[in-house]
Amino acid sequence: MASNNSLSTMTKAYAKWAPFYDAVYARILRAGRLEAVRVALEAGRDILEVGVGTGLSLGDYPATHRVVGIDLSKAMLDRAAEKNRNGNLTAVTGLAVMDACRLGFKDQAFDAVVAQYVITLVPDAEGALDEFVRVLKPGGEIVLVNHLGTAGGPIAALEGLVAPLAKKVGWSSEFKLARIAAWAARAGFEVASVKRVAPVGFFTVIRLTDRRAAQEIAA
Image (tube, rainbow, N blue to C red; front, side, top):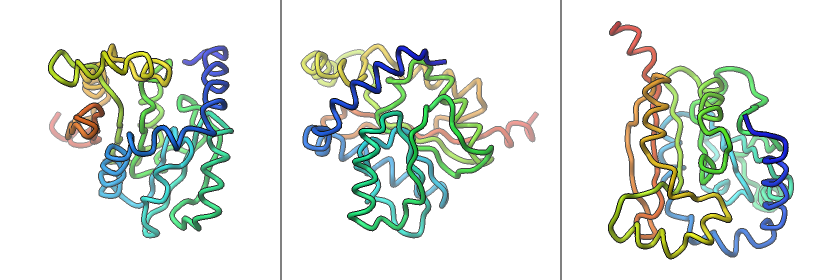
């Protein structure tokens, strides 16, 4: 569970980043954002975006779907709300300030939970994933996008170059895919796909599918 101090620190940091976030990150995060939305759309109509930030992805969802966005930072969320108003984004049904580890939604409310560039920021990543499962409909999917540490090669070299900036926004090379896979195995989820995306494969889109019902039948 995240402490009040760590949440306060994160909130203050993102309040400072909010005015500049789109200018700095829109292009860098675009490939991962579009792939995450594409995967989520296949899971069903009701989608929760955890860590929606300034709402960069909100305009990517078609009107055929229903999207709720949450974020810990009100400053970031205010900018998402502005995009929603100005762009008449009909897919967006709600925006709220909320902690990823304490989601204020009923059980089994969404077909997909999307967390873009969030999971390495959350002090209790497994706790957040457990909350995602609680609000997910049976058979639903969790879609994660993040930078995850690699063992070597050109991506590892890039990690070294951007490490100072990455640390400031919560991208840690110490957070590995194996940690997510271990949680998935315990929770009854399958790592259905892992896809590296631009720039130069620096970010990874992970699709986690609920297999609990199938496992119960098999047992």
